[in-house]
Image (cartoon, rainbow, N blue to C red; front, side):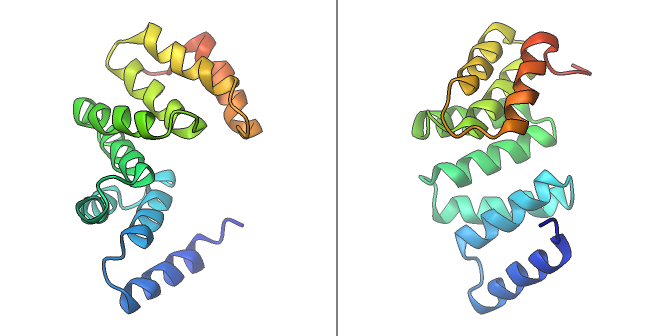
Length: 142
């Protein structure tokens, strides 16, 4: 719905009721990452969530993606590799892992993970189109 202001308010209100809830922290922080908004605060929130739920693949993916966004690629890869192991059939996790592999100059491996996304059930149309472009051009500005 793209009503980020109200969504943020609702999630922050939820945190007032139940402070440091790992899943609410993850959801709010990841939504900020997707908007390139409050990245450092999102990382702090994800670190708290990860301390509580260090085996949750969604939280692991989120924190890995956060480190990717601040160009801490080695740290990001450690998390994203683990997320792929825990959720090998998740298109977004595989896409994220492909992106980090590209940034680490492991381009053949990156294309492998991106190509796997094309075969996964439930991959959203927008992501499929983005992956097709990445397979041809890689990540631009890399």
